Length: 171
Image: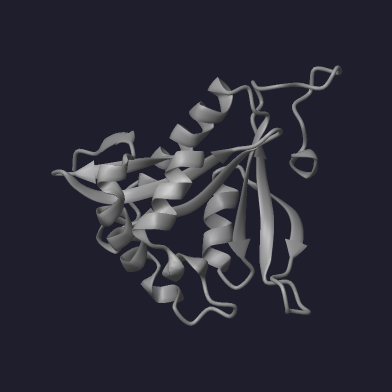
């Protein structure tokens, strides 16, 4: 299968929205509910205008998507989605690699993301790509942790005066 990767544009948003709803369909019962189901053309347009996104296409159909948002000290990665028919084919790695390249271009020392505590397979996938646990967090109104912040230091980005890259907890 030949994959094409490119920057997401506003023209892609209806197809991205459809992909997100399909890719996250198995998370409809999450508590608290996933914000992905509140996404609209307007919210995705806003996200693209403040950050950016990459899509993976097969035969001009969107089968993978990731959103990124540059911050002062890190690149945020969110809404990583692969169409269920294309999982296990390296699309997540392709998208994460593109976000890493974007972070390096912007001289950001690391990438951060949030993953739900109950989605252990997702956490394991991110760990396999070099992301490390940073902290447990909870959504408003919850007493127990509901998600985990994870980070991946970029070894060739900004370094300490010691020459070492930042640790995940410093990201």
